[in-house]
Image 1: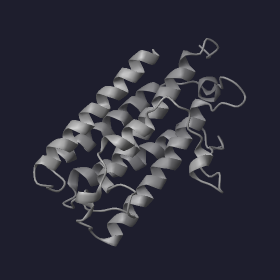
Image 2 (image 1 turned 60 degrees about the horizontal axis):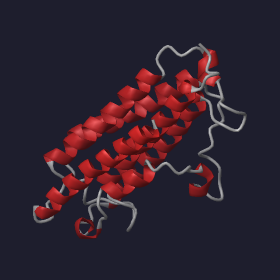
Image 3 (image 1 turned 120 degrees about the vertical axis):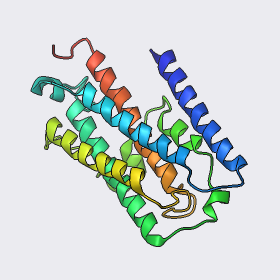
Length: 209
């Protein structure tokens, strides 16, 4: 299983890197039709997988924990929603600041963010929100409510990506934060990472049947 997941990450990174190389070779053109399709496909795919993985879960299954210090599936989905909100906020701020065409020359390859988000190494949410802990899910809203929240936000992102006429490679909240296009890669990558976690929870021998 670990080998399969590592191979999947490597293949996804190679696909992203290839797309980035092709765009750079085209004289630093802006956001392309291929870019739009790539984001749309993966934002939709990852949401569909989340919905499928959580379909018809019982209350016991939503709330099962591998151990007291691990998150339940309900908490994982709530955490996804928190980060979905944060990414949308960052994108909104970047768009509000106006385009920065120089980012086309300064941006790192698209693969960098996805490789980081999907690495096998454990990530601790508090490390990215110091001194606050707002990314820690409380588990109070319930799994089904959290899924509805995530679905609403993701579908709004899909509507935007599918319809915007903006060059999403020319917008960024700040230097070195990545373009809006890359923030969306992080967005679906983050969901992919936690889909991996949800599948691990469901594979636990003690997971309620």
